[in-house]
Amino acid sequence: MTATLRELWTFFRRDLSIARTYRTAFVLEAVEALFGVAMLYYVARFVDSPQLRGALPHSESYFSFSLIGFVFLDYLNAAMDTFDRSLMEARDNGTLEHLLVTQTSLPVILAGSAIYPFAASTLRIAVYLAWGAALFDFPLREANWLAVAVVLVATLLAFSGLGIFSASYLLLFKRGNPAKWFFLGLSSVVGGMLFPITVLPDWLQFVARLNPVTYALDAMRAALLAGAGLHAVWQPLLVLLLFTAVLLPLSMAVFAWALRRTKTTGTLMHR
Amino acid sequence: MPEPAIRVETLEKSFPPARSGWRALLQPFEKPSVLALAGISLEVRPGEALALLGANGAGKSTLLRILATLILPTKGRAQIAGHDALRDPRAVRRHLGYHAGSDVGFYPRLTCRENLRFFGSLNHLPSALAAERIAHLAGQFRLEDALDRQVRTLSSGTVQRLSLARALLHEPRVLLLDEPTRSLDAIGAAEFRRFLKTEILRGGETTLLFASHALSEIELLADRIAIIDSGRLLASGSLNELKNRIGAASLEAAFLSLTGRSPRLPGEVTNEGAAQ
Image 1: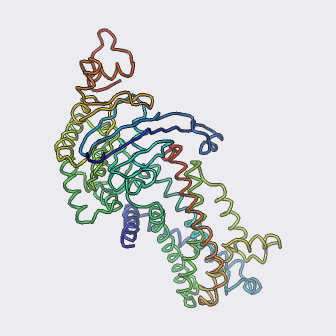
Image 2: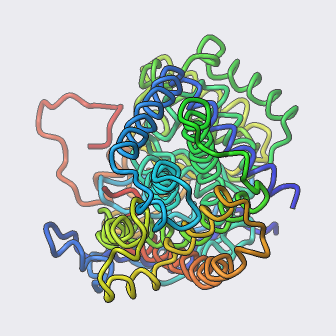
Image 3: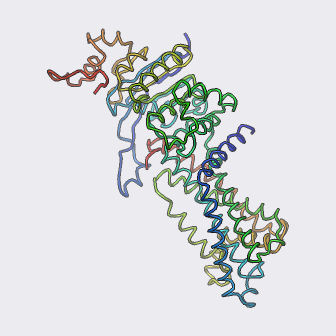
C-alpha cells in the first residue's frame, strides 16, 4: 500500500514539475476562466426571467445553473480525455515502453497519470466558481462541501471507466475513439448542462435519463446550490457508483487485453 | 552449475503483416504471418556478456524486447533470473535494465535529475539511494553539467548517455542493450564501452545481453557472440571459437561467411566499425 502511494505520488510530482515549466499557462487559464464566467453572467442577465427561474432545478438564477453545467463539462472532458492524452504523450515522447519495463503495475501507471489532470480540473472548477462568487454573486454560501466532494469523486470514477475504454481503443487502433466524441456530444445536448432536460422532447428526455451525466449534474447542483447533503443526493450517487462498479473494472480488463494484444502484434510504439 | 541469468528456449515470434488505411483497423486481429524469430534457443550465464550480431531485421531487437516483456512470444520460453517473461513479467522487470538504443523516452521539460528520480522511484529505489546512484552515474557518463538542465536542451548523444544511466540506475542483475552506442560520438562510445567493461562487467554480478553492429564493440565487450540471421541462431561462441570454426581471419569475415553475405569487393576498404 505504501509503495503504491509512493508510486502515485511520483506520477503527481512528475506532472506538477512539468506543469511548473508552463507558469504563464496558469495565469492565462485563470483569465480565460474569468472571460467564460463573465460571458455566462451576461447571457444569463439577457435571458433570465421569473418564468425561467421557476423551471430550473435547484437554482435561483440561470447564471448559477449554467455555470455549474459549464464547468462540469470541463470535468467530464478531463475524466474522459486524461487517459487518452497521457497514453498519446507517453507514446509520442517514447516514455511508454520505459514505463512498462519498470516495476510499477499497469493500474498504478494509469491511475498515477490521471491524478494531476484530475487535480488540475478540480482547481479549474474552483477558479471558475471563485470568479463567479467574487464578481457575479454566485451563491457559494449554501454549498454542502462534503456532498460536493463526494459527487465529484463519484463522477470522476464513473467517467474514468469511459476514458480508459477510449485509451484502449487508441492503444489498439492508434486513433481517437469516435464513441467518446459521440458520448461527449450527446451529453452536451441531453445532459442538462445549459438547459434543464424538461425542455427536451419526450424521447430525448428518455435518453437523458439513461445518461449518467444527467444524474451527476443533478447531484452537483443540489449539493452546491441547494446545500443538499449526502442523504438527499443518494439516488444520483447510487447511479454513479453503479456505473463505476461496472465500467471501471471492465475498462481496466479491456485495457489490459488491448495492451496484451499490442504486445502480441508488436505495435506498442506505433502511431 | 548456476542457473542461467537468461534462458531462451525455442523462441518463436511472428507479427501480423503491416497494413495502411482502413485495413490497419483489422491489424490487431490478423493472423501473424511475418516471421521474426524462428525457434531461437540460447543461455547467458550470470556475469557473462553475450552479443547479438545480425543484419537489420535479423530479429535481435525482437528478442531483446521479448526479454524486456514488451513483446509477447508466439511460442517458446524466455526467462530472466529464473522468472518467465510471459507468466511473471513483474518479477522479470525487477532484475532488468533496458536501453532501447534511442535518444527518446524522457520527459523533455523535466531535468535529467528529475527524469532519473522519476524512473528510479518507479523501480522502487529509495530517494537517498537514488540520489547517490544519480550522482555516481552522472560522473561515469559525464552528465554532471547536464543533470539540472531540461532534457529538451540536450544533444542526442547526451540523452543517449542519460538513457544508459537510467538502465543502470537500480543496479539490475541483467542488462539488455539494443545498439547502446548508436547515437554516441566516438569519444562517448569509447567511454561508455570502458565504463561497461570496468564498472559493470568486471564485478561479474551483471549479465549483459546486447545487440550491436559495431564489431569493435562486440570484440571488446562480449564473452560470447550469437550470430542471428532471419530469426535463426546460426552460431554462437567466443570470438576465437567463431573464427576458428570457419577459418576466418576476423569477426567480420566470420559473420559474412556464416550469413552467406557477399564477400568484399576487390579493392574495397575494410570497415571495421560496421558489419554491413
